[in-house]
Amino acid sequence: MSASITTDVVRAAEVIRLGGLVAIPTETVYGLAAHALDPQAVARIFEAKNRPHFDPLIVHVARREQVEGLVTRIPEGAEALMERFWPGPLTLVLPKRECVPDLVTAGLPSVAIRIPDHPVAQDLLRTSGLPLAAPSANLFGRVSPTTPQHVAEQLADRIDLILDGGPCRVGVESTILHVGDDGRLTMLRPGGVPLESIEAVAGLVAMPDRASHEGAQLAPGMLPSHYAPRALVTIVDSFEGLADPGEVGVLSLEPVREPGRFAAVEVLSAAGDLAEGASNLFAAMRRLDAMADVRRIAARLCPERGLGRAINDRLRRAAK
Ligand code: AMP
Ligand code: MG
Image (tube, rainbow, N blue to C red):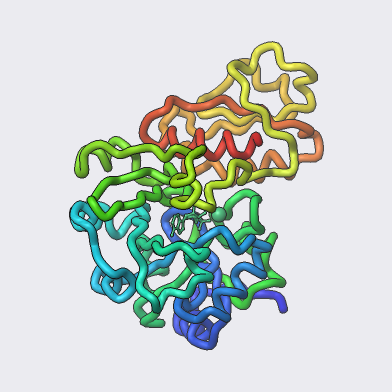
């Protein structure tokens, strides 16, 4: 099997209805989608990605009303977030109904849900009429895909179809928020919606205590090492004085001094814009990784605000 790249949404919906796997464009990254309520179809996602079963999946829906069919209740506070940020790169973790397979939630009593803000994803969700479970369309632990070609490189012979929706606009995965019964919000993963924007609508958001039992229960998929290219990634304070610069691929938000010293330089945003930087991050990591001269990748962290939080989270995990 070698999945073709297509724009045929009707065919993609048919594949999904038959229990197949379709890579789909979203505004964040490409997802690997299957019928979320069909455990066999969902099992194929884990197989194709080599994803461990303790890492739960996000369920994508077309409309707000579909959420009620998947969760037992919508805690106070979640409503305002849906209203403000959906469709968009915000995932809410809510108490699940029995119809959601345990495989989707890794046995957790909660399910992660969002409405993607991409016309092709929405078209497929509406045409199939189904909720779609979809993690990023890459091999587990590797760099996430932001173009159909990225998907094809890793998964072409493991999935049924790749839907082409062009390059992803946001470029990093969704922000994940756990909503407690009392409405308390905990950020499980920084992503496409900045923390500042969420707090402006919903008040203070807690950060999970990764060491605590509760943290582990809330977010079994928050693995420290992820997004890893083949080359060794190091976080550096400065690009000056690096050993053997001729073997180093530089990953920088802004332009660097004397770029000619290095094997390669990827500047995420000429103007140092964090949103533009996020949208270029994964493709830049892949380009550096593909260069024969690049033995090591050196990256500098961005300011810890706005989309900078999501960029830094991905860089730190790529460096582990
Ligand atoms: P991705 O690999 O981008 O699809 O992200 C899926 C991530 O969502 C997982 O790795 C978890 O961190 C998180 N997630 C999904 N479902 C749940 C859930 N029920 N509770 C907590 N976190 C979840
Ligand atoms: Mg992923």
